[in-house]
Length: 435
Image (tube, rainbow, N blue to C red):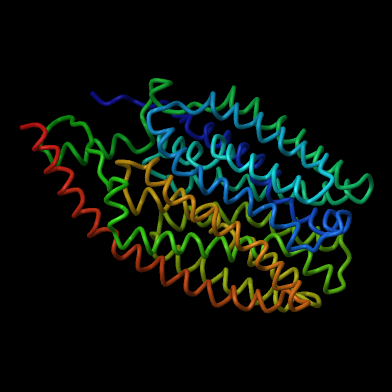
């Protein structure tokens, strides 16, 4: 007998909780870091590319750990480990405020990157996938929009704090905000699976009915389909997809974390640059929701074409942002385009490879996100140090965005056939075991 769900679906509360976690872990801690590049590098007496290299240390350690966390969480619950991750990440952020040379930043970032996967990465998208069969793109878009919302609010606040009391106070402020948001949300709002509350995922009834009709039975257990991790490695889909993930993060982070530096180099004052960054982050909020809706309504192909085109255009607009009104136009376009950085991995991984070994496949895709972020920020800053301008890097990003589009379209086109092929292999293996 089908279980009748209440009119209010608790999964949307879980979405709100995930939104808050993303707001704190990404919006508060990551999307505000561009405000620190100029003051910290100046105070420590190092070049901007030398300082921003600390982000690479964090990304590389996260890259190394991502497959481990994917395997670690395969049969484990999340909440306890998420709380541990919060404590370690907060300690690292506070430690930044005590750093006296750039090597301290490198060491702290490495530790932070190792444990970042306890909070973000696998837990949030897996929890959302547990709750939503239908409207998964919308749910992920809303949840991941938290990073843009927090970034838009905190960047001017942190910039003002740095201007008044120094960059060390800025890191301390971020740490406090992070803890105030994450701990209560994880304890009170997050439920890992609908079964924890006697519920079913949204869309479960329709999936059950469709499977039952196909099997000619009144009620069936819906088969979990998709590739195993080993099968993903053998697929064209995987290799095109991870190349797209890598380039996406190179381009997205290269633009995002060098906006303030480029605008101040171009003669705009730091508070104007912070306001542009805040506008960009604010527009990112509806940008992620819109992209999720596009994925759900029109499919991944249309979503890929739209979002990569916007990424290319936004790079050209930032290239032109040496005078008004181009910074404002950039903020508007990139606010939507930047949704690709956080939406692509959690949504497309499940759709391209299925749910059979989601956490394990996710774990071997995420390192390429970390690798792209690790390279994109310091490489863009290095080009500025070498040439005296960010503009050559922005032109390169505009071209690479079109390459990303091509790679995603190939991955999307090859996925259905490969899923069908590996499902047959999985079913044959299961039948053999049954015999």
